[in-house]
Image (cartoon, rainbow, N blue to C red; front, side):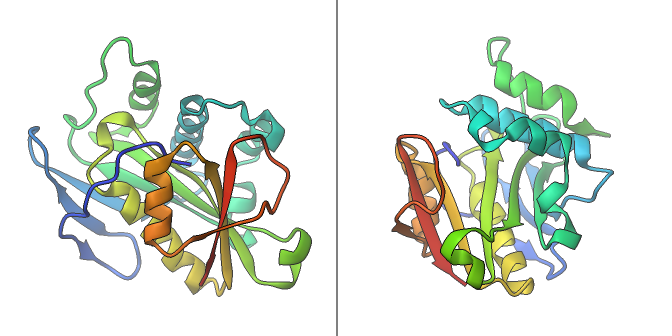
Length: 217
């Protein structure tokens, strides 16, 4: 789920290994360069856990029905490479891109735990296998935990993260990708629909207000 305003993606350069996916971030702040890269466990476990927590805190619902605490404790869990999963991180080398206001608890939480040697970890997305119900006969995955820190939103980074996740899913030979999001998150829904996701019936038990999407890969 993702609540940010989506803007057009600036020009970027791409390395097929997904270790270097960069574009200049355009804003009134000093120039910064964004990198989308795979998370490496256990090295990046703290970064991933911090961003997953910030994601959970940003939502108007409680994720306990998803056993979220167990998911955090077990990282990488189903997101591990050996489980045919993946996590991607968005990072910027600018220490200026995240300037939290004292009242912005969510952003302070991300900034304090996700900076290493001047590199700011500002976003994430994840892919995991999905084998329940009718989708057990297909090679199906699920897009999860799309999140960007507040000050990193509106610059096209979400589009790059989803693109990385989709390419990885195809490399892993998945046939279908599923996701859920809150119906009120119109920017996220536009983003997903722009990639070709179509709304479907519920594929798992959830809370009120959630909508479900599918993309044939």
